[in-house]
Length: 110
Image 1 (cartoon, one colour):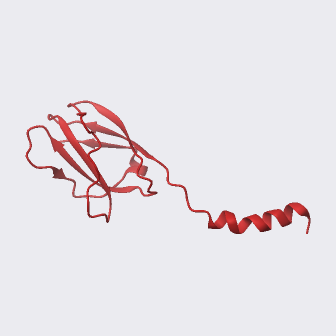
Image 2 (cartoon, one colour):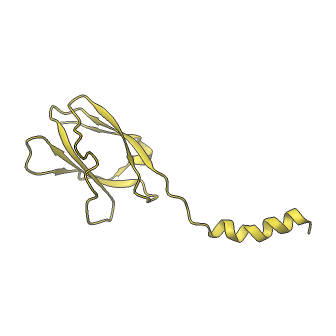
Image 3 (cartoon, helix red, strand yellow):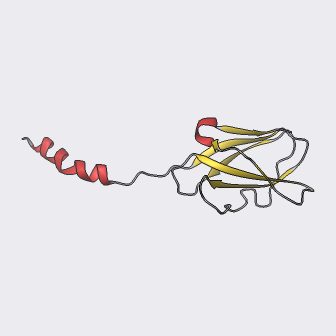
């Protein structure tokens, strides 16, 4: 066995044991409703609590879009989403699961 082969064989277990690196999830949120979107919460499927409001003090007006990054350190793509609109006392929750990695964008419609 030569030196390169020995070095590779010694490093292989370390490479296989290294944890997968989580990547930030970036997608475009498009508001095609007639209402101002004031709140946007996400949570990975299977997590019982909603994450912080992604918008903070920002809003997304009708017809606008915004590129969002979920940098939660997880390596998942399937997220539940909850949206709050101006004047609404409750937040509407999507009833389906979205794979934001595959979609690249999510459009709200009425």
